[in-house]
Image (tube, helix red, strand yellow):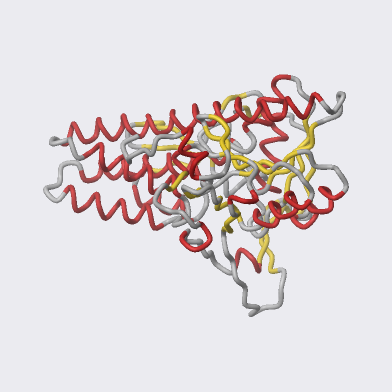
Length: 371
């Protein structure tokens, strides 16, 4: 997508041994590129959220395996070393299905390679395939979701279509285009009047710091709201549709997304507002049926809840402050699960389906790790 008229992806290979990313930990106050040259650096970038988002984590994991191959390609214990690197990558963000899926796909591709040269060439090819595929799938998700916005726009008589989103599932969360915001960008680029209600998304404030940043740089009208304001807006007819992303979706259509998504789905259901989850098919975990019972929910550090980072006008720099009494205990669940019964539909690169096992299988053949 565009940043002030210049096209960027979120991750790319700059040199044979250097992967570059947009450092999201610095946004929205500073736009900078980070260089990653080892699998350890990639693991740290993922776990410390210099990069985040389901699809981008998957692409980053693929490039992490590529960097690991560069490191271990000539070693006699290559397979053992690569298994250790794979497990380290998977452990960085346990809820995200795309990460595990990408690592498995890379590992499977490497099993047919016997020489160091073949290993490096194969890892490079498949990592780039995963990256390009993510961007293309998100573009296609945008086109499918665009149809939903078009239908609403026909009834609005020129008034903007009001879309609510939670967290950041725009292009910063993927390689390009995004999922939940891909239909918004497609509609905006087509000239359809749109307006986005952006949840702040505590505790890390990805909505406030990332979604507003990318929407603003692309020129899409938007308004930042506190997380608890969504239900009020729905009650008063100010939300036409809800789009969210997903970090893992079960075979039955349960959706794991940023903590607080479940509450938005409940409010949407109570007010008769369509609620869609947008995700590439690689996010679907075909081995899990009951998301509430079976999806592992990542728990992050208490500091994310007890402290906030923002721009200090006096000093002219970003500062972090404590917002609660010293010594306060805090729980920090990164995700929650929205049951399929609250999800109007699931948008993937293949189209829009009901949030059900039958609906998902109608659009997707159950894939293996090589696809």
